[in-house]
Length: 197
Image (cartoon, rainbow, N blue to C red; front, side, top):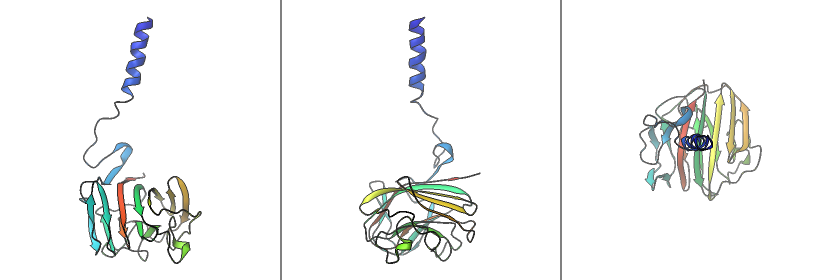
């Protein structure tokens, strides 16, 4: 009896490591869709002049100004990804863009990554022109995990788990998301999104 109980216990412990069956291409668990997988930019359309390239599975650009705009539009969603920038660099995650050919804070929302921005109300962690940062978070010279949640007019942003911005704003209800290169060296990896029903 004791032996069979141990076998069952070992089986249960071992089966926890197996995980779910492989998902469809571009999909991850719990509804997450991979936008950048370290291999290609098939989920995006490039606009502007940035020199996007992939180095060892990491997306980077050194030339401004440009965007990688998702081919799909989103209304209610959660988005996450890692970004690396210098203290002088200008990167960002844009969302609900209404003019995909010319993305910007004039026609969408931006979670900014820009430690030394002249107007510090729009520095790293802010949703530019909508919500100033709740805390001073410096991202320069390190990988930072960005999490954005937008459901209806309510939006939140977190950097490495710290809530940096929250807002209620209904100007832009739906649109693509985008990665930004607006000055200096910027890098991205592990970019994923899932729709919230």
